[in-house]
Length: 55
Image (cartoon, rainbow, N blue to C red; front, side, top):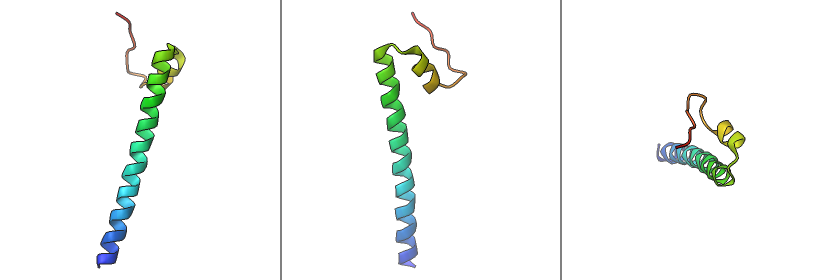
């Protein structure tokens, strides 16, 4: 029983870590494009419903 619980915990923690890494990569790409003023990359990283505007 303990073995199953430990294996389940390892699988779940591995999935969470993979999701965090994917989110971290998206954030890094966003800020690199932001600092480079690359609007095409910014639009590809954002949701279609998101409104990008300047002040």
